[in-house]
Image (cartoon, rainbow over all chains, first blue to last red; front, side):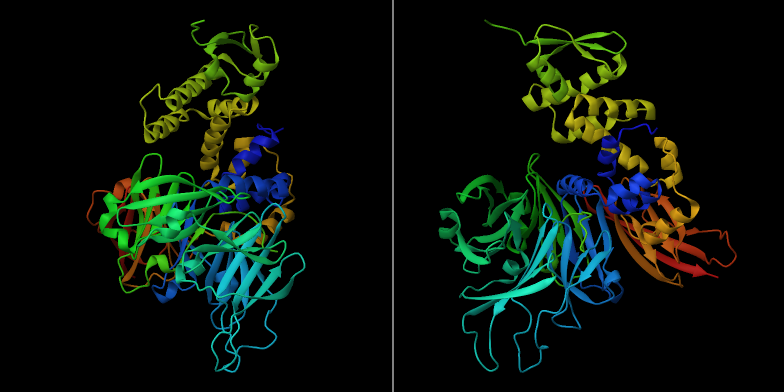
Length: 355
Length: 246
């Protein structure tokens, strides 16, 4: 009889990084079964939710082409490789430990993968016709990944404006949704006239069964309810909508929508604690005095109730809310590369399977 | 009614009695439940915990209650350090603490102790883990080999914090990695560990020129040059320059 009861073993295993966890499948048959057990996957994900990470696509040297830099609040910096996809890809969205990537050489080809367990799924093709210059719909404007841990499934959303060759977009917003349960795509069309900045497109948030994007005008959040396939708008707090000269970013804070508003000297953090009633609370107001010089080029990337990751051109910083301390987690020397904030995604290490 | 704080009496498996403040004792969900559903004056039996272990646990609970209530002036970092020292005990005591924390349902202590054990087994081989936890290996040799092959990537010594992988150790190879100051740096080339050095040995040295004696005549002799740069609190970037002599 082992020293520990099963529930203690589960708690210990839930705190291991993914590699040693998988290596330990050879310890005994019980441990092998545990790693794929639904309850354990849920427990592991709950424990890992407290450990925030940021994944960055670096455009550095050719040998690191398919690898990402992973900045982990507890364990530091490491490299995560996507070579198991056997394709050159670009990360488009991150949710609950899964990534949605699009193939660079093959437009219209998408993968959903777990970079930690090296599990992946090639999604079936969603276009009826291949992209050529006569059908320049091109890449989707919005790419969202909704990974629902409790229902053990995920959805991928590709949304974009329809544009016939030689014409401007006509307001027709085509939305393709992939469901991992049915393994199929479905399509619905609506009319919209929003536009999205680069950061708006990168920062999609999945909470309460819906995907959320901040719109370019910063006047509302566009939400796609995945149960009913409906688009709706969520308004921002008045102080944010009417504040001038502020930059606003949408993040996920412990499962709630969060807005971070950056002005010259302050960072205001709003969280929608009551999703039903759509009420925003300002949870913190942080002085940016100690990073004054970095403020114009700083972007928040990931957040929990305890800390916030931000990226500048060359650095990743973390702000700890309890101690009110700023720390630099990572920096690059090569200034020829793309800014770090350009392709940085909130991430956490889970063992959620992608198939 | 000017009461001083309520006290609760606890009796351990070895018949020791502890009298503790209610606020401290109810950190344990088990004790809280028994207290709220039983007779408030009676002694609560904690059968599965010995006096020594309960004493340590009560120290932990007291520290955390006082720091949360502001009775003790201690910063989050200092509390973190205190916790780290708290678990610096021998393995038997640590395991007893886990079992007690699980039984008494003290979530933060269970989290701390389980994380400590997880860190302890992180680098261990499966055989070592079986010994540590007294687990019987119920795999046949073929089955175990099959599982190992299925999860081959988990056994490869690639990646991870502070590990640098170089495909080919040719002359004049340069590479860098970022790691935290508490770990070791491990350089791997062609799936063999070429160098493993603890950061503390590298710290405070601007550069190190070392000729490594090859164990295998075909392994090149490597002159390593290491430069380091602080990239943030607790993290350093190590920039390696290898020159090989065959």
